[in-house]
Length: 297
Ligand SMILES: C[S@@+](CC[C@H](N)C(=O)[O-])C[C@H]1O[C@@H](n2cnc3c(N)ncnc32)[C@H](O)[C@@H]1O
Image (tube, rainbow, N blue to C red; front, side, top):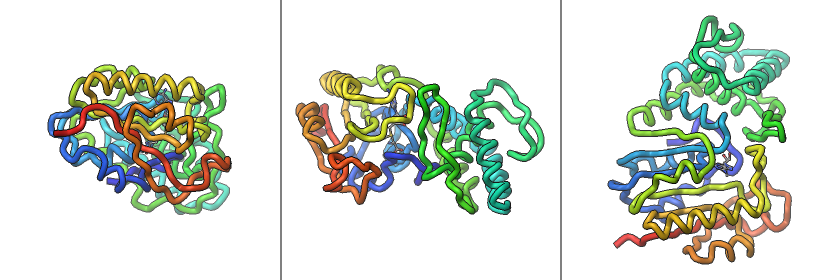
C-alpha cells in the first residue's frame, strides 16, 4: 500500500530493498516505527505485521494526521475528497487562496471536540477536530512545494504553495484505502520522542528508526536533529538490541555514521537521488540501513 502523502526522506523508493532485509515473518512481533513520517515502510510491510503496530513521530501534526486517518477513515477521506474536487476545478487565485487558508488553519490547530468548518474548505457544518486537522494536513501536504514538511523555530509550518494545478482526483479514495486498512488492525499512534514510543518494545519485537539524516534536512521539528541526537538515538537502539529487540535504522552514508553504528550490520541501499545540495550527502547514491539485535534462526 502506498502512502497518501508526500514526505521529504520518505522511503517509498527503497522499499523493495528493505523488504529483502526485514524479517519475512513477524507473526509474534509487535512492530514499532517511531519516526513514521508518511508511513512508507509501515504501509509497505503492513501485510507482514500480525500483532500490534505502534507508530509515532515528534511532529504533533504528523501524528494528528495519522490518528485522524486511522480512527476516522470515512470522515477524513470525505473531507479530503471534497477539498480535492474544489481545488481541481478552481482558478489559480482560488487554488492559492485554498492553500493559504489550509496552511493558516494547520498552524492554528490542534482542535479539540467539534469545530465549525469554513464552508469553502470541507463543505458546510461541523467536523470532529481531529478529522479537520487530519484533512487540513493532507490538503496542505498535497499542495505545498514538493510536499515538504518544514517548520520554523516557533513550530509554524512555512513551506510555500507548490502552484499545482491538480491534486490526484482519487486523493480521498487513497486516504480511505490507507485509513480503512489501518483501522482494521491494531495500530496505535503515539506522538512524541522515539524513546517514549519504543520504551515498551521487548525481546522479539521489531523497531525501525528513520531519523533525519546526519548532515541533511532536519527541519521537521523545532528540536532539529544534530550530532548529539544521532549519538543518543544510536545508544538507544543499541540498548534495545541488547535486550533482544530487532532494530533497523536508516541514515546517510558518511564516515561518522558508519563509525557510530559500527556495532550493527550495515546494508548499503542504492538510491536514485537525494535532495541535498551538500557534496558529502550527494554523490554516490548510497544510503545505509543498519540492523542490530538477534539474528533469526
Ligand atoms: C526521514 S523522516 C521519516 C520518513 C519516513 N520514514 C517516510 O518514509 O516517510 C524523519 C522523521 O523523524 C521525525 N523526528 C525527528 N526527531 C524525532 C524524535 N526525536 N522522535 C521521533 N521522531 C522524530 C521527523 O518529524 C520526521 O517525520
